[in-house]
Length: 264
Image (cartoon, rainbow, N blue to C red; front, side, top):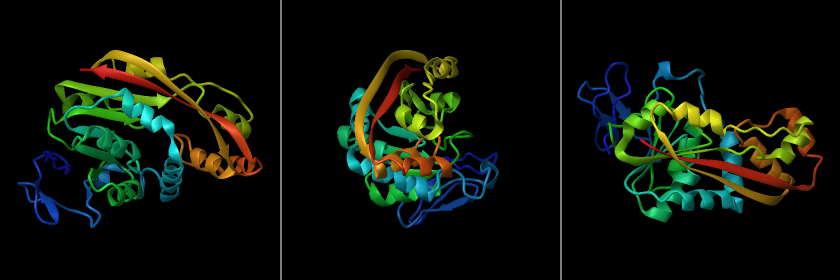
């Protein structure tokens, strides 16, 4: 896989040496002991520690370790051929599941160092990069047969660039009913948010929608699982909301995902 230098105005290919990546302009990036490389530049971060916190990452991993059937359903819905890039991969559970299912070269990218550190330590057969996917994907053109964005970043132009001409893109977004019971318990409102049409429009300039599918699963969650899933969700869990969840023993919780399969 050809990584590209992220130093401003460079974008030269990076050559892997024993403990670092180096480009022709002598920009170098150390490879962490756990195996990932941090390509994030100062101008590409909005805070000293961008992305998910260590606490949110740990909560998400704990929830997945309990067994989330939506992960397997997503993987089955998108058979992968050729190298795969998971954009906004977080702690790596989805990428690792694709790797196990289809035995493909698997790369994950995220702006959160705690997320990538945990992913790299756990899933040694996948490769991980810290970078700002909203700005630039540090890979050569047409590098991947498939790209996934699972409740994560959306950069249509860059996704199009790094995909092969015959490549496929899977965008997964929270369904309208996702966690609706917990949102009602913590916010006092049962609002269903449909993001599908807005997402299709966002990708229309570079991709054609091939298939749309909704996955739905209702699980009985105890208090710890409810706190984990809300802490690690796309909107996080505020202090007052956590206090309200801590008053519940268990609840039936709806988890939904809208899957959008696109072609270049």
